Amino acid sequence: MNCVICRHGTTKHGKVTVTLERNGSTVVIKGVPASVCSNCGEEYIDEKTAGRLLKTAEEAVKAGVQVDVRTYHAA
Image (cartoon, rainbow, N blue to C red; front, side):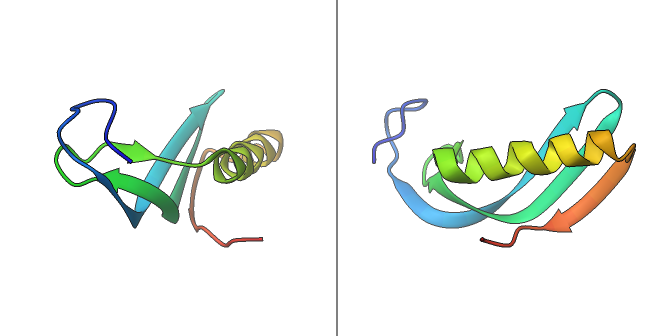
């Protein structure tokens, strides 16, 4: 896929770290599968993975977590 941000690079499969913040909670998830632009580093996460990340963040907020660091595990 060509990068929609820089329009010069192509994306390659990789792993990234995602930080999500909501209502005073910060959740850091390492090792998230993504497509990463070889030119500018823009990260693209597929819809299924994004849904799992958002669900994880919502669970942390409900549990009252202030800061949480996790490693991504595919279902």
